[in-house]
Image (tube, rainbow, N blue to C red; front, side):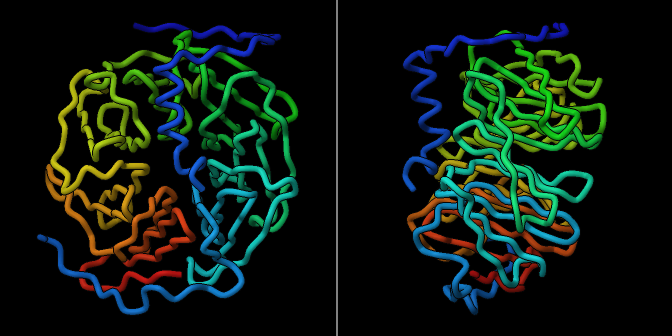
Length: 338
């Protein structure tokens, strides 16, 4: 199935979300609303907080990094900035204290962040200051990303996609014409992109998001909280009950991979040491063959949702109650809490 979605200009309706969609949206946003084969990692230093930056009242939602800075966002407009690969952090707070739910690094070195009130925030100085652009849609946006060509994208309700090529001054709005929420959006390169969504939807693009092709649906209308694709053919999605599915044929077939717990998966992130899944109960999993294995982390009844990897064996993860971990993903090296 292939089609080119048409712009829905002048959209003024507010879509009524049916009960099943409301329930899955609530599950996706729950952290926002609720403000043995691996070598063992050394937990020395866990529990030490960075003074004046990371607070126990913080609930982090997303993290993005470029070559010079990392930006962590969360509830109440909280933004943490690190310029030393997560060793120390500076704290900022946006006016109006919006609930920030996503952030991404752009090719020009700037950052964009999405807030739950459908504002897209932009920083051109490594996260130190921000300007807001209102998104011109009645649909709830859930995810935002910078494409390799510098365009800003957002996706969310009624399979709506927004694109701006002039840093938020003008937007093109399209829909994949499904009454469902889009939950993840990833550009593999300038031409190839993948979105996943409610009811197990998977769509891909080969022309920079100008048209989208429907792939095979996820099993049992699985609701993906997280996805990570290495090509249009191969990818992983994660969600409730600790389920992680893997495809090698563009979503036509999916295989559920074994995980060590039923803790929901909220993010997937990769570096040179492998692919990692981050979720509830402060869990971090590493893919080993076709199975996932738990890494030792501080035992805490809080979620991890934000994650960012680098090529220097580093994985930074963060979540509820100010939990912020800086992991060296090589065996037998340190996991440190900031």
